[in-house]
Length: 143
Image (tube, rainbow, N blue to C red; front, side):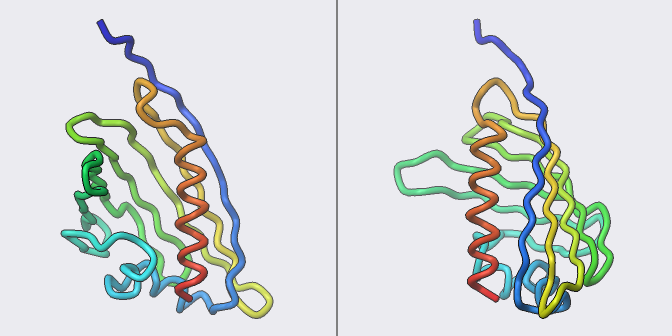
């Protein structure tokens, strides 16, 4: 029998980008801009109550399903969403994420906070934080 457990964790990542808040926000809100730094979704409804959904993965690898519900959007200031992440048919985590944007000298300070429940050792907060750092680096390069 498989042992079931939940690991709860919160991590916070800060970045400063040379782009203004409007441009950083647009990189999250516009599907064409977002696809430059994040996998292109099958569904993209950037609005409160809207959904972002993607399913895919590497050849010969697991299939990942990313399913988002946008909870709050304050243009150019805040994006809050909850999401599930599945690998093949296993739910590996449920998270709530807050992206905050603040004007900074010559650009934007972004604060990314994720609060997650990670299930049965299929994913870990450390792996998620590492992947999020890579994602935010890709965002910076796209700006």
